[in-house]
Every structure is written in C-alpha cells, then in structure tokens.
Image 1 (spheres, rainbow, N blue to C red):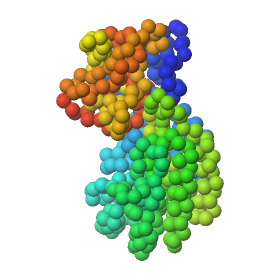
Image 2 (spheres, one colour; image 1 turned 180 degrees about the horizontal axis):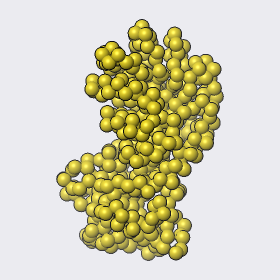
Image 3 (spheres, one colour; image 1 turned 90 degrees about the horizontal axis):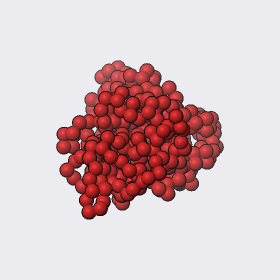
Image 4 (cartoon, one colour; image 1 turned 180 degrees about the vertical axis):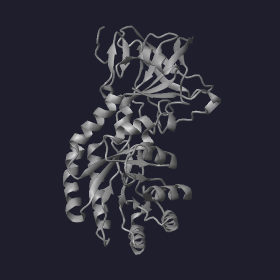
Length: 411
C-alpha cells in the first residue's frame, strides 16, 4: 500500500491516505462505511482528540485548568474520552448534564451554563452537586429554593456579562445588551445575597465570544476578564475558587484562515494565572469545545447520482444541510464559503474537475460544496467534509423533510 501526502488544508493533520483512500483510526473509508452500516455518518478520530487535548495541556500555565464544553459535541463516547484529558466539563442542558454525570467526573467539576435553565434543570443540578452558572436573579431564587427544599447547599457561580466584548470573534457572547449572564454592575448585590444565605460563591464565569483566530484579541479579552474577575472577587468575604474565562479559541475552516497560535495566547495567560493565585487564591479555567473536537471529525456521505446541467456537474449525495447545517453555509455565515471537502475514495487523484456537491433535499440551500475542484467522482464514491467534529448533528435540523438521521462513530 502506498502512503500519500495529505493534500488538503494544514488544519487537517492527523488523517492518513492509503492508495487514494482516506483512513480514519486505522480503518479505510470504504471498510468503515461497511462497519457503520449506512451513510451518511460522522466519524471522530480518537487519536486526534487525544493528541489535541494532550498538546494543549502541555502548554497550559500552572494554575490554569482545562474544561470541555460539551455543547460542541455531546456524543457520549466523545465526552467520555475527553473527560480523561480535561479537568472538568461544562454543560448547557439537563440532557448534557446527564451525559457528563455518566462519565464519573466529580459533580463539583461540572458546570451548568445557559440563560434559559428550567426550574426542573436547576433542581437537578442542585441535587447532583453540579455547579450552576447563574444568569439571572430568578435562577438564583430557584437555586436557593431548591437547596432549602432538598437540604443541600447548592454550588453557585455567577455568569458575568462584562462591559467589554471579544473583538474578532465569530459569535459575541458578552458586552452590551446580551441575554447571557448578569450585567457586571449587578453582580456585587447578587454575590452579597449568596453570602447572606450562608453560602460561598464558587466562582465567576465571564465568557466574551467564540471562534476567534486573532491571538492579540484573545489575549486582550483574557486580560480584561481576569482583571474584572479579581475585582469582583475582592468584594467577597470568602473569595472564589475559580474564574472561568471561557475559551474563544477558533479553528480554520476556510481558505485564508490561519490556525491560532495557542502558545502565544497561553504564554500571555501565565502571569494572569499567577495574579489570580496571589490576590484571590483562585485558579483560572479555560473552557474549550470547538477547538478540541472540530478537526477530529469528518462527515461522510455517498454519491447517489451525478448530473450535468448546462455544463455544470452536480454530485448528488445522500447527506446535506439536515445533518451538517454549518457546512451548508446556513449556520451563521453571512457570505457562504466552502468547508474543506474531498472525495474520500479518490484522495490525491490528479484528474480533477469543477463539481458541486448537493444534498437530497428539495431546497437550493442543500449545498455542501459549491463549484469546487475535486477529483472526478461518480455514483458510489464517498464524499468527506472535514473540520466536522463540532456543531454537527446536534446543531442541525435532522428531522427536516423526514430523511434518516446520521449515525456517529468514534474510531
């Protein structure tokens, strides 16, 4: 068998190609499709997930803990794997909380964020001993009531909506009027209420934005975040155990995107972690999802028809926007760009042509690759969409037009 050089974007490191066929977890793509039993499916590489987590941990300064944000990929097997290489888990729903608790991670190392927690979810978190990142006065009322009813001291943190925002982020989660968190000016009064109830505030969650490839912008946001967290902690009688500064680490999806230099960001974080330990005896938490899982996943679908319309070639596949909304361009893109797409059964083949990859749905939005130079493909070939480990099936309208839902496998 001939091992060929991986021909795509540098961010796709970790995958092998043997005899023009993509290999995932040591298994050729055709054989993997047979093992899964049907297309389309998502495949996540165990070795890439582990390598990314280990590499990041090796760069972490002392006093900085790494948490995995389950919302990026809540597949139980993925969560279980990453729980072994991280210091804690962050959840955003009762269902994610159950997945996190099933890993065996201590409930005290699980945090629950979200602006719309139900009263039942808050009670579940209090009963389990999970830390609640409170995002409103009402959530505080409900958490205190659940604690009194259950005879349990709730683990409480406050999510702060800072006055600044993360520049260059794909999605801004803080700064200005936002549904997330509690405005920083109102935090001292709520912290005082928690202490008056005989409870110690666990920490502050200050998360400004996501999907950022600008190291300088991240460093500046982290500096402001730590300064704010320490200022708020200074007004408390008992201080806090941690300050969660969120994540925001982006991954390259499109031509021209450059990978984030995490070493620069984390080197700059070291003195901030020292300051947090010295002035508040607190550690910092970075909470990452997309950065850990996106490059480890691929979406695989099969060509079921090849059509030519007025000279344009369309590869019709059995998957599309109902499984992978982000790759279709309908998940936050203003101007649609192609994700990295390849013919997984013709990797590195020299003979190429301009082809579009479209799904089976009755809508022109069902587009996975628009006029891309791809190896010549035909019915039966397997199309692969890279950078698909984050916000895949759980962020897609899987029941749209009642097509089958995609399978998922960790290999």
